[in-house]
Length: 154
Figure 1 (cartoon, rainbow, N blue to C red):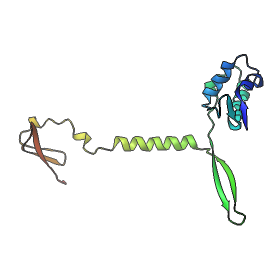
Figure 2: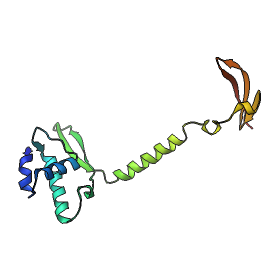
Figure 3: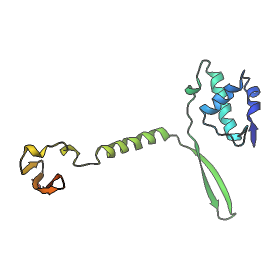
Figure 4: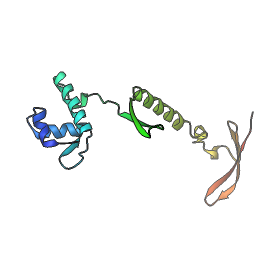
């Protein structure tokens, strides 16, 4: 069921329509049709209104971001009906932090030669060793010097 945005000013006893649009924007609500929102969006606005009335002086940005419910559907084979159940993601923020930490770890360790970059081979002559790598000058490729790189386990 859809609800008219024009009726929300009276519903929440607000002095201006702009207040309604500020709340809609803060909750990232998209109208279903021009001037109408869904029942789910109305529930979100109701929760925000309760929060603001229970916390005088609180800003829209102080409203806690609630995790979205995930709907899973299961098919009951005996009746052929779908059983829809919802679960809350209680540990969503913890999971997100773990994924971000793993991503940072892999991003930092993606280039195994990164610690050897910045060596100026001109200072070493035709052959030099850096770590387990042996660099040997082999001529030119265009205007660049060609190097043969060997890896030796020590």
